[in-house]
Image 1 (tube, rainbow, N blue to C red):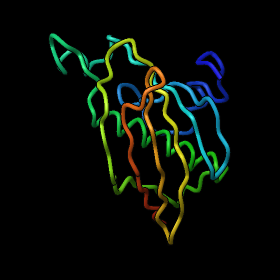
Image 2: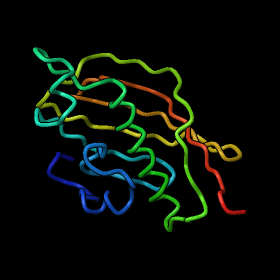
Image 3: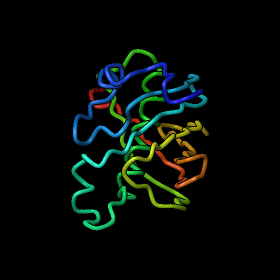
Image 4: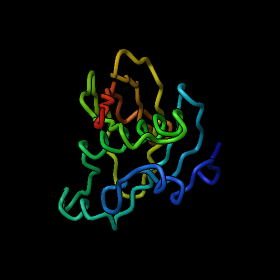
Length: 152
């Protein structure tokens, strides 16, 4: 599948996630299978505000935002897998494990994010996530969410 093919575009993503510019870090969903996996795309452009100061002479996509983009992709997998959102539930990003940054990401790169659903136990959901640029792994992490019922 190339970057011109997708199953959810930015309008669909805006209906799934509460994030908005400049903190929405997913541009497209390329592939998806409920409770199994999701593939997303993040286009990195020099116009993004964080590149202005990170770093001035050599702009680099911040690692913390890489983790956020990966988490947003995992959140889309959760929300699309369960179907209808329950307004009485919140999903909190509560943990990262075994995170490694392998290469820097710069303006012009396309980050392909691959989310793999690992398991759910009680109210915790665990994912293995990879960020890939030019077919090379630039980041990998295990990310954990907690589902909280807020109006019981």
